Length: 293
Ligand SMILES: Nc1nc(=O)c2c([nH]1)NC[C@@H]1CN(c3ccc(C(=O)N[C@@H](CCC(=O)O)C(=O)O)cc3)C=[N+]21
Ligand SMILES: [Mg+2]
Image (cartoon, rainbow, N blue to C red):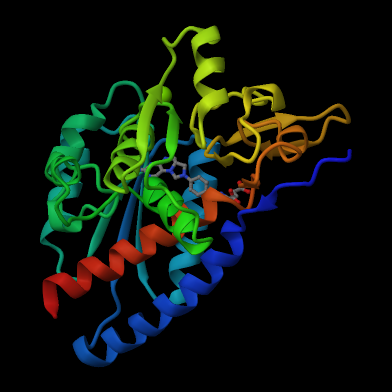
């Protein structure tokens, strides 16, 4: 290839430096308040991917000194049992953050469960109050993955104002809040989704200065779809088996191809994922500080 390769947006490195700063904030809180911040992650059922994510979160907590209160429930847990647990955690003064790992098993109503989390402990930013604050541009706890994307862009000093940003995906976990955060940063934002016709999607991609992909389809974004010098953020997380039968994690972007066209590109793994975990830790520390300092 003659064209220059994109610079890697190194989420892993930024996660490490951010976490060492968080560790200091945790030390100070321990001195001032006599206890460490606490995070409760509720996981229901045995989805193996969820188990890996939750384990990563717990390891990260341990690394920076946050106490984790893991809550593993069997897959036949009822809505009432789940909501009772949330109520207990709301009232537990050692717990500063509560996260309900998604997706929940089909018989459980995630939206109803999220209503029950005390907004000031909602470190996922998914309670209607925190989502509403985001819509209105107010302060509040904000969703970890989109916040991690914004932090990554900021740390590389990539300008957002007046850029054309395309977000593919409209989940409440990623796509919608990310579009709102880019809008707040004065990008001209478009959202595409599963009902966007493929030809339209291609055209929108080709115009995007900042392309954020959160779909869950390996190689959805190929080089011909990317505007030269675009910034490409891959939020996809797909566990695939390659030709040799080895399992590996890939995003939604054809990385080697797109690296020849983009100016900056997040790898998977090592891009957005580690930033998601870091923003969760940061929200937990912030929740503690806001309620007690
Ligand atoms: N209520 C809720 N909040 C979430 O924030 C949430 C969720 N539910 N459900 C699932 C998704 C997914 N998610 C990830 C977290 C860390 C990595 C992560 O650490 N990724 C590493 C590697 C992971 C690996 O190797 O398997 C990386 O990209 O480098 C990925 C994905 C949080 N999510
Ligand atoms: Mg979607």
